[in-house]
Image (cartoon, rainbow, N blue to C red):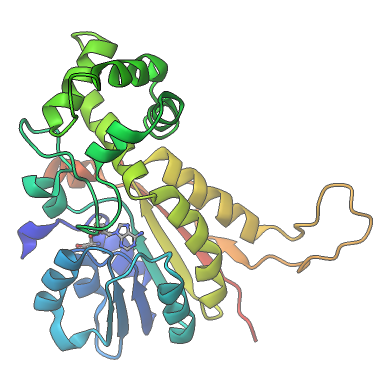
Length: 303
Ligand SMILES: C[S@@+](CC[C@H](N)C(=O)[O-])C[C@H]1O[C@@H](n2cnc3c(N)ncnc32)[C@H](O)[C@@H]1O
């Protein structure tokens, strides 16, 4: 099972949760983090939108997990379940698992001949191929510019729209060839990985989901509870940083308000101003950890 996914920043996360008893793992994946968090006396609610991941975690952790949810963590049913659970630790380890990336039929990879699918919940929503065929040039430009940090996004979007007359963007090679045509022959694996990730973020509505879920999670958290988020993409990290800063503010009234009418106190504290990064040794052992950033927010005591 260790090969399903190598959990990132495992010791750091286990250390953060060492005094917690009611834990929600919003992205249980292969269950690596969850297993490390399941000490005696811990109750764990496990969520994943991917039924294949949930089944793998169920096989690994079995009855030690008290509740399993095969839902997007931003789904109103998941948010309600988390609120009822009243956790003192919430973990989000965003993005995709090693297993999702390694399984060609899931269609996340730019390995040659891979069908462009990329849906975290198989069978639900538009595939990457449908998205590349159906979106207009402005929407494609947005995906590559905003989610892919690509300065030649307009050229890439135009290349895809032009190629759609004779190419159905069914497999990875179609997108790789379009990227090469737009960015030049020096485009390589790092560009493919970044731009495939941008398409994946769009296919799964990943940033919108995070934006919706975080405010609800902080409300659900018990006093002194912790929310820990591992992000792998600058857009995800920006959202996490934004909400943590909002929650740490004393006053969130609009600028110029004469009288403070907001909560008038911070919801808690950001644990470390700078994100926690994997060590060099962890990155050598698990190169997929290299872009990880862990941010931690601790809610104030409510008593
Ligand atoms: C990086 S992996 C998590 C690995 C896990 N921490 C472990 O130790 O095995 C991310 C997992 O989160 C799931 N996921 C991503 N976004 C999600 C969302 N919005 N709702 C629920 N699950 C999500 C993916 O399906 C994937 O299984």
